Image (cartoon, rainbow, N blue to C red):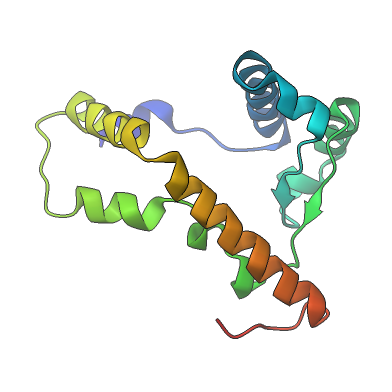
Amino acid sequence: MEIARRNTCTINANRYCETLRKLRRAIQNRRRGMLSGGIVPLHDNARLHTAAATQELLDKFGWEIFDHPPYSPDLAPSDFQPFLTLKEFLGGKRFGSDEELENAVTTWLNELAAEEYDMRILKLVGRYAKCLNVGGDYVEK
């Protein structure tokens, strides 16, 4: 797939820090009040999350880290992000070009209701609370 080849890169701490900077700029431009209220990213123990450069940048931004228990099946990001819904949307469709696929996904993301994101975040908060209450042990859904 051309999109994958064209945009393929290794995600390391430097690349992740670039992404965090872009996120901060987007928040400043679109939701200025959120920065003063505090941003709390969910991080696992991946090297790019624990790297000194990442930690220094997060400290500079004043962002608190929402720790993720290592290898926790209860808090898999894919359970709380729209990947499954996107997979359903793309299922059975054929695209004539990478650009056509990219446009379809971009349109789908732009139309995805904010309530969908809110619902997924609320599920994450509830599941995280359950994990904390049992000391990080496995939680049945």
